[in-house]
Amino acid sequence: MSAFDDYLATFDGDPGYLDWAAFGPISQAVRAEVFADADLLGSGRPSSRKLVAERLDEARALAAELLGVAADTVTLQPSSSHGLMHALFGLTGTVVASTAEFASVTMTLERAAQLSGGDLVPRWITPEDRFVSVDAVAEALDDDVTALVVSHVDFRTGYRADLAGLREVLGPDRLLIVDAVQSFGVIDDDYAAADVVVGHGYKWLRAARGTGFASFSALARERIAPVLSGLAGVDGGLPIDERPSPAASARAFVVSGADQLAVARLAIALRDVRDAGVGAIDEAISGRVDVILEIAERHGIPVLTPRERERRGGIVALAPEAPAAVSAALTNAGVVATTRGATVRVAAHAGTTDDTLRMLDDALGTVVGAGA
Ligand SMILES: Cc1ncc(COP(=O)(O)O)c(C=O)c1O
Image 1: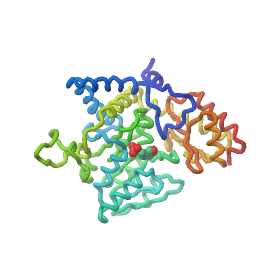
Image 2: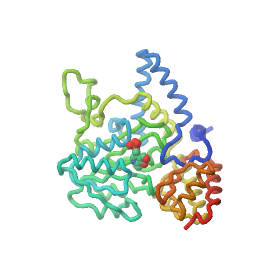
Image 3: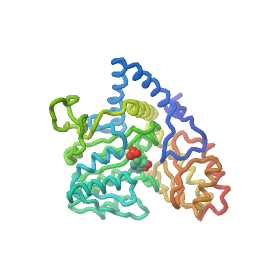
Image 4: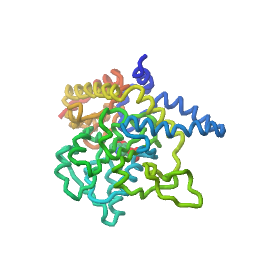
């Protein structure tokens, strides 16, 4: 078996699951190995604790490898929102963001601005189709803009931002801050084009919550004050009877010690992704999305997600005439998806089987007038 086949074998959930953009059922490998780590912690032996503690460097090194950056630029965080808080609370100037971003972007930027006493000003944009395109960002730029914060793959439309194009239009002096929750580890792209990348392991990495991370490039560390830096954000171990400055490395953007078992889950998941290859995973997901797009077209259901492979990830946003009826039909057929307002979001992973796609097809076929 190839490493990719081994990876596919770790998908053992029920058929019909198309909700990867909300939650990734925990990988079989992660479940098996994290129990062993819990047993090690159960012994209390220093050697056992040390073994589990090594997962921290392992997870950071693997995340860095997949991001294409140096390991000392990566921090582990309780969630991706925590990573965004470190990035945005320490920033000044005008920050461009779409009003349609996921709440971890909009709420964090809003709160950071409120606390800044006018030093941080959001420049909200509402681009056409909610796509944060290079053109939409170019229109919002002027000399006051210090950063853009954007989702790599949009949680609602499935639009994939053009990281290289955004980097180019921003130029070398403005920060590109990317929420890669809906892409990291499964979409092959140039993450190193960004100055800050945040993500987590509870969707596409299949490692459950507590598995956030954030990377901070040299420019990000120069521009962002580590205002939320905590006791673990310093060099040289636990400060006792002293109050040292935050570390010069990305470690400055850390508050306290990480949850060992969450870190272990993340490390196991990242290792499996690295071994399988992000390119192969991306290719497999793209093939499943092709099928979903074809199914939607056959049933006459409008799709909000771009068709071009390079502008989409694993999410397909369906906009049926009767979203409630489609949602009910999917539920009745055992297909798990997310319905929000007028859209039904389906998200396929590399391990999504033909059976699952057939269940989707059959369920949509039962809805009279599903399309527009
Ligand atoms: C694009 C995006 N960013 C952030 C989050 C939330 O991440 P976290 O729970 O790690 O803060 C989600 C969750 O759905 C999301 O879709």
